[in-house]
Length: 351
Image 1 (spheres, helix red, strand yellow):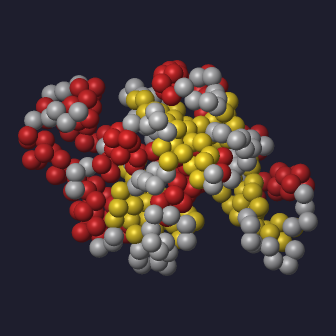
Image 2 (cartoon, rainbow, N blue to C red; image 1 turned 180 degrees about the vertical axis):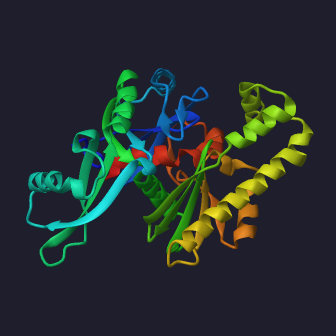
Image 3 (tube, rainbow, N blue to C red; image 1 turned 180 degrees about the horizontal axis):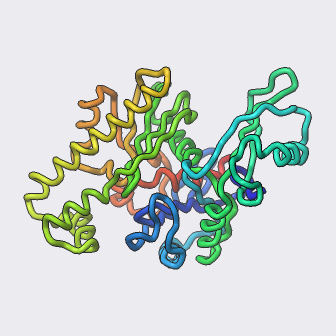
C-alpha cells in the first residue's frame, strides 16, 4: 500500500502544487505551538497543471527546485496532496482486535467491493477512526487513489531533491489548517464553509465541529479575470499577471472589469452553497471563510457576507502564530489565504 495517511517525520515541508504555482511552507515546533519559519510561492507555466492534474513534470520540477533554492529548508522530507476528486474514501466497520497488518490483508481481499479499479492500479491506505469503537468493531477510513496520480507527485518531489514522506488528501490538509482558524474564534461555530477559490478551481468545504462532511469542486477561478484583462488591454498572459499583481492596470480595470468579476465570484459562492443545501439536510451554516488567491479581491469579503447573510472572513491560519525572522510579514498578509493547503500539509508533524 502507498501511504496516504501516516508515516510521520519531526519536520515536514508542506508542498502544494496548484494550477498556477507551487507553494512550499515550513513550520517548526515552539513549545506546544507552531512557528512559521518561511514559505515560498513560485509560479508555474500555463498548462503545467490542469484541473489539479500534473501535465508537465519538467516544469513542475523546475519550479520546485527554484522554490527550494529560495526557501533553504532544514528538512528535505515533504508532504504533498492529491485532490479530493481523485480519491475514493469509504468508511467500513472492522474488528477492533485485528492488528494493522491483519486489517490491511482483509482490506486487500475485500477491496473490489469498494474500489472500481483493478487493485494493481491504485494506492491504498486506511486509518482507524478514534472514538468509534462499538461492540468490538471500529470505523476504518479507507482511501484509494489511482497510482499514477500518486506516483506523479512523488516523482516531481524526488526529481527536485525531496523525499515524499506523506501523500495526503487536500481535504484533510484543509481540515488541519482550519483548526488554526477555529482557535481564533471566541466561540467555535458548529457549521463552517470554507470556499477555496484558486486559479481554475473553486472548492467548497463544509465542516461540522471542525471535521469536513462535504466537498465539491467546480471549474471557476482567477484565470477568468486574467483572461478578461488580457483581452481588454491587449496584454500577454505574463504581462496581465504582472500588471494585476503590481496594481499597474488602467483605471478602467477597477471601474468595470473588477466589479464584474467580483460579482461573478459572489454568485459562484452562492451557487456552491445552494448545491450543498439542496443535497443535504442542512439549510444554514454559521460562518464562511474565503481562501485561495481570489479571496484577496477588494471588498469581496463584505460583498459575500451581504449576499449570503452569513458572517464572512478571509482565511489567515497564521494569525497569532510565531513567525520566523525570514518571513516577510507584509507579503504573508496578502498570501495567507492561498497557503491553506500547504499549511495543513506542513502540520502533519503535529499528528
